[in-house]
Image (cartoon, rainbow, N blue to C red; front, side, top):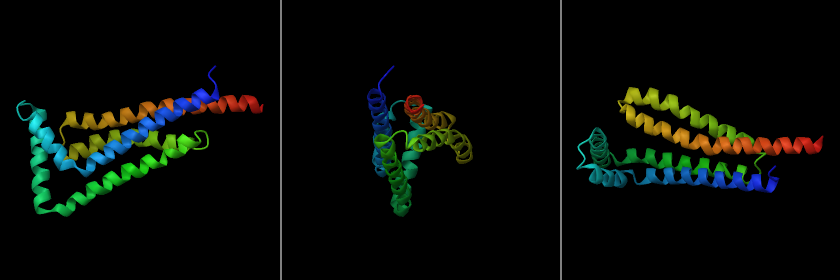
Length: 164
């Protein structure tokens, strides 16, 4: 049976990965037009539905930013929200058992990505394959959070046996 130190160390690694992923995805929202320009350039010679979609989104965002730059402020807040949520997971890093609820919150949030992607994606005319990419973020988030949740349960079980 693994020691509490080993379990805690594993939880911290997974939480750091999760926090880094949230921070990275948040930061990318700040420079969305530049990133889409790069993707559009990269995908322009491919003549696929993906490259068509990237080009369409890039042109729409570029034209919107020219005429209505204040709308990009919403992406700034999206980025900020990712950064704030990442900070919340520091509680798990510090004390996993006490802050198990943060893991539960994260897992629920990851599951909520699916109905949002399929419902809002359909309403907004987002291609199905892109909705699936969005759902991938929920899956990528669920994996480390579920691993952490199970490890926290191991720690709780060991503590309950020691208290007994």
